[in-house]
Image 1 (tube, each protein chain N blue to C red):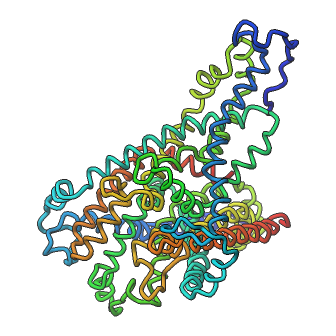
Image 2: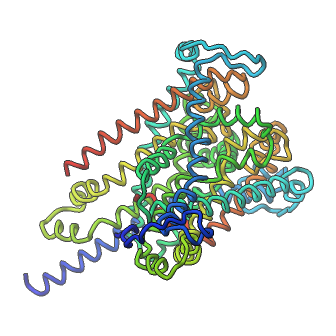
Length: 286
Length: 314
């Protein structure tokens, strides 16, 4: 090919590439709008006064904080936020403790029964929660566990998903390091706590965030186990609150509630994006 | 990767309960750690996840109301009742629609976004974040937000009117409602699906594309003969996970339409929920749960067989 023809060829290719990217940018931006708009509309509605809610403007002509004041003073929303927080924290701590130990053992040791145990844990992942809620309900009601924090918490204290996440991270720990510690006389617990755990800190971060999110957003089980208003978690409270508000056509309230439900998580996500995305990508590939 | 167990064992000592823990053989200490550490989690899983399944089967074979202490064994009666109940069958059909429409929609949408993201460099992080945010937000909140958006006098209808399309009844229409619910489900899951595909796409060596380009393959040919086959394992995983998810549709259905209008959106799980906690008929509810579980199980097996074997052939 002559030199000028080759150059022309390259330029055409580049132009194609750039226009390909341009289309991508345009499409992605449209999609971006689609993803973000519902949230913007939700927030915007929550700042509107009742007479304005059916107007089509994104920015309210009169921004009012009244709706938020009403929700904090007139409804159990703050209590629900505390409940969700309490439950999520305890679940996260428990999962971090137990899942890490189990993942560590499965990753770094061979022992009699290991295959069986592995399959057992794997099979618990196959059983969907929806299949278990009725037995859980029946057992909880006979043990007086209805409407208690313990009742909300117990299904989520140890998670098979977390075990596999931890196992994967632990597998990458150099066994030589652990053996060296053993030869130096360190006990197994010491090795776990002082060597293994600090080395997989990113895994803990991911596990914590994912568990916290999962706990905060869980709906069907808390819906079933809680009965009194003051024990609701945020999703349950919101469902309850919204079906009542809808009857009085008070959509502003509902949108305010929704904003409060959603904002903490978005903030949390923006802070911990890296860990969350990495955690999902890692386990997704497994 | 070496796991432990290769350390030469010390000769077993006689003083088992000699002078305290320090006298324990090294191997014993290790075993204590292993089984001790596994004890609680294993117990937990057996009690919380395995036994309840058996309990569920048991309840499904009994007449189990909440008021009478009597739970007589009735064999397959509950199952028979369910299979002749038109509402249950409707919920099965609806759930089928959720899966058959929702899974491809979610996968295609996620794949398109992932492919588009691969083309852009500058704002990739921003786009990725924006597409993912819906996934971390509460399903309940999102359901109500969309319910508000899709009101007869809501913003979406207003936009439709502006654009010249007539106003729609969205969630009030027995024929349309279910598809809008699916749209919301897909909307929320796109980010997750996109991530999975992005990770899978990144694992495909650029070398293949370059080699194909040299051989004269067009973009479309490269896509069909390189991208798709190499994404197969990721695709398989996604199909299975998405199917299981859509088969268990509940939260959006409950919060957006409550199962209506005219039972056009009710899902199996919602029906189970109503049976168990509105009618308090635990026997029927458990039987429905078992049926659902069987469906999930079989579907997963079928998918693993069909899609898995296609991968082996490549």
